[in-house]
Image 1 (tube, rainbow, N blue to C red):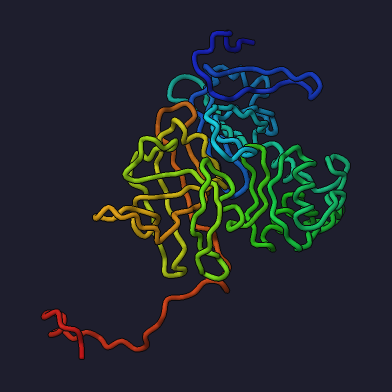
Image 2 (cartoon, rainbow, N blue to C red):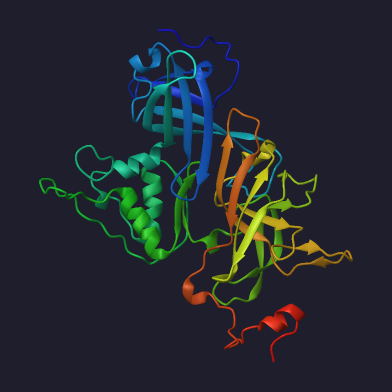
Length: 376
C-alpha cells in the first residue's frame, strides 16, 4: 500500500488512526486531501468536512472511510480557556474526531473522491450510548448526579473538560427496553440536551470543553481583554457594572487589535426584543481561526450596536457592544477569511419589554401625504 512520503508539502491538520485501540498507528494522507472545511457552532459540536482523492481505491480498501474511524485534528488557538487573558503565545490543540458520514463520488479528474463528515468523538459516543453491554457507562442512569452535576459527570465520563452553570432541573431518562419494537432508550446526549432545554441552557462542545450554561452566564466569561462594562441585566432590563472578558472588534478597524475585520459587519435588531441583536462578520484568518462559539466579542465603532465616537469626537457608550460568538467557519487549507456569527444573549419571554403602543393611529390622507403634513 502506498501512502505519503515523509516530505509532506502541506499540513491538513488531519491524522488518520488505524489498528486496535492498544496498537494504534497514525497515517498522514495530506497529499490526497483536497479540502478541509471546519465549522464550529453552538448546536452540538464542531464538524469537519473533508474530501479525499482516492483514484485506485487504495484508501477505501484499507477502510480509511469507515464510519467511526478515528481522525485527529490539530486546530490553531491563541486564546486559552483556562487563562482568559491573552498571553501572546500561539498554541495548537489536537482533538479526537471520528467519521460520522462517508460519501463516494466521482472526482473532476480520474478516479473517485470521498467526502467525509467528522465530529467530536466524545459527542458521537454520547449519541450512541443508550445502555446495553457495549455502553461505556453501562446504562445512562449509571452516570450520577442531577442538573449541572450530571452535566459535569458526563463530561468527565467521556474525557471532556466542563464549564457549567448551576441548575436545579432534573434529568429524564427513557429506559432501554429491548424487544419492544419502535422503543429505544434515551442516549446520554438525549438526556443532556433535554436537561439543557428545560433549564434554557446552551449545550455544546468546543476545544474539548463541554459547555452547559445560559447565554447570559457565558457572556463576558471567555475573551482576551478584561474591563468593567455597563451590561444590560436580562431580567431587570437595567444597566449594571460588571467585569467582563472579551475580544475587541472595531469598525473602522483598529490595527492594534488581535482580531481584524476585513469588511463592515452585518448586524440587525428586531422589535421582538429591543435588546436582541444578531450579526455576522468576516475577519482575517491570522487569528480568526482561533475564535470559538461561547467567546465574547465587544463590537465598537457602530452607533446602536456598541460604543463609538460621534462626529464631535465624544465617546458614546449607550450600548456595551458585548455579543456571544455562535458560529465560526473557515477553510483550513485555504487563504480565505473566517466567517463568524454572533448574537446578544437569548432572553426568556417574561423578561422582554415590548415597545409602547400609542393607540389608534389615523391614516394619512392622500393630500397630506403629498404635502408632507401630518393628519389632524
